[in-house]
Image (cartoon, rainbow, N blue to C red; front, side):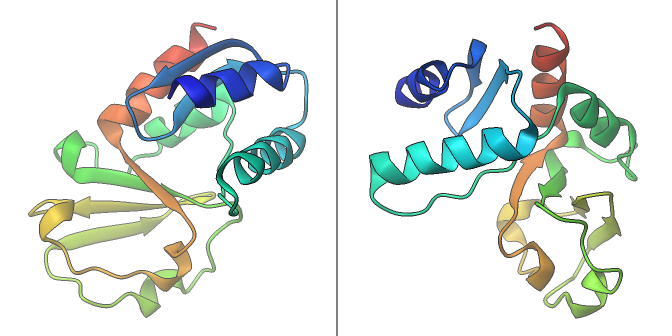
Length: 150
């Protein structure tokens, strides 16, 4: 995470903070989200030698994702938002396979999933989420809080 923080600082982002060792980083930037994404993806590709996709959300978008959680009474560590670059297709959930006790809902640029027995026990596959990245509601709440405090 130190290297990621350094990359962000080198890109000119300020007040850079990382959270847990899964690629979560919060910072300030005057650049557009699209420019932030392309700059960081280029830096990560140069560092790793392969393409690494990232997803960018503003502080207000993170707050909105948290508020829009369609499963507010479910355990936050079993409830995830799968972050996507684009809005999921309206029929995205119709193509899901392997569901048992999972509940799914479409968001703005997210797919929400409550894994009743936990993500580690699930065989759920959502083709529309193939290139997304998932974070549970505890992590989203922490990142939203960090971003709002910048």
